[in-house]
Image 1: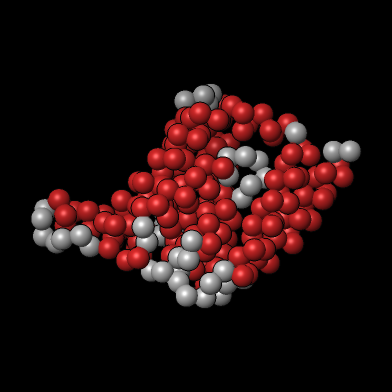
Image 2 (image 1 turned 45 degrees about the horizontal axis):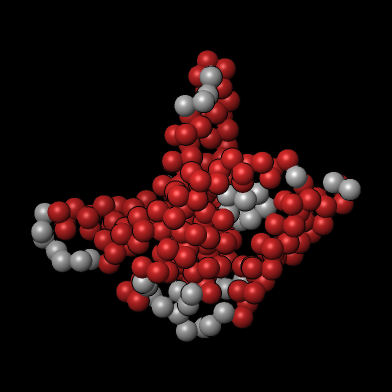
Length: 209
């Protein structure tokens, strides 16, 4: 994620640095940075307050299957979102809060984090590319926070190499997935993933009977 969006992250760092040095007034990168912070707040609160309850749902495959159906429905409804879209300059703090809540809800197993946050951005009338970019950039602090919490529980002697190997594989797959997803988002075809979610949801419910 960080590598894929390295240019955007660098521009954000430059913008924040310019503000701190008083060389520039309110560049768009700083607004993006502040909106990501705003969106992270509700996600953090929801994660801390409901983490145990959300995790308990993993042992209930029928619930996971039902949540996959909901994810599919949300994705499918994006095909009717408005064609006129707002750019970063028109994005409001309430947009960030709502996207952050969508990310918090995605802690529930079966609810897609990227699908939920991107769809929320589209429902709010944000530009397709902005919705995708904001969703993935927003995931960085959430993933880092979750990783730090889990890292403390790890047995370093037994799990370190397994974690490194898994991380390397996930990195390669993640880059390819992001390239594919951003293209799909730009052409407005993410609703096609709804069929995958519905199919997987049906399989999970049938297997749990």
